[in-house]
Length: 379
Image 1 (cartoon, one colour):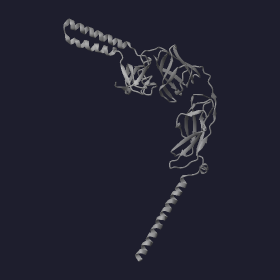
Image 2: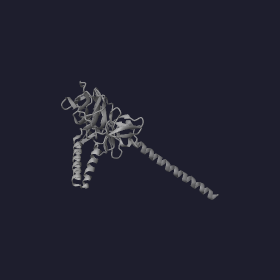
Image 3: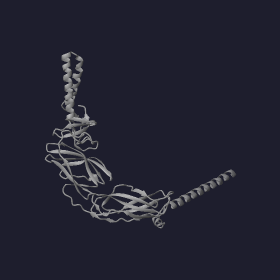
Image 4: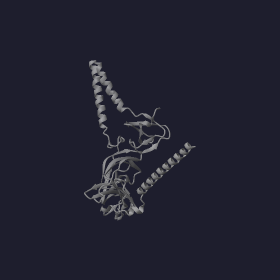
């Protein structure tokens, strides 16, 4: 009985000790939670550590223009991890980067935000700055209220391409026949300080982006437009921010029978090189054949067969290729290019040419297209 009594006493003491430990741990956790989570009212009662003001703001903005706003920020806390910003209550604009670009001097942080004007009415957002401490300290946030901007409306002609830029240049272009009534023009253009994805040409039967590199500093686009065969020039205009006027762009329509081979090679190919090579091969074969008959040296036959084989290879007529069901026929041999037709079943089309990874085909309506190698099937 004495042993049993000691057992119950020990059990009770152990249980009390465990409960005390749990209560102490819970209290510590609760205190830690209370110190970590401070309500909004308490945060606003904390001392102000950030001071914000506008350093650079545009005096006027055009719809479609990319512009910058620079904020000057002063922190009374010397050692901290970072300053983060949130924006709200904006109107008529689009933020182009998640994080501002920052410059610092001895006292201030200059934060530059990039925006795209999307409307004729613009209000800058409210900028709220939060200081992140080194050891999870909580600081009072500071908000710089947005303001309305003066928006200037353009009065463009019908040929305006929706491009507002510091510069816009055509690097390369090429025109090929699309069908019996249309040509297809492909061009590469670069622009500065521009939303180049807004490009749109009036009067095009069909148009679109083949590839694009977007940046609010430098951008590049490969664009196609299907136009009427009667057009002698593809013309449009853009608004130049530096010259403060509309600039015309002209692309002469010179139809080339060869389709585009690569994204960076859009100029017409010079076919005279192939003809010259075939002529040289034919001359070598003729001289070698003369040597066979005149000198009876049959070793010269090698110089007859090889050039003739080359001539046959280059001049051989196109042959049919089998295209898988559901394959895309593309305007250009580009990975992200536009597919203007999807094959409903197996197609057998005339093969015109091929480049790395692509086969050029002629459709039954005489249109020219490109098919990926993996979409070519065995007969």
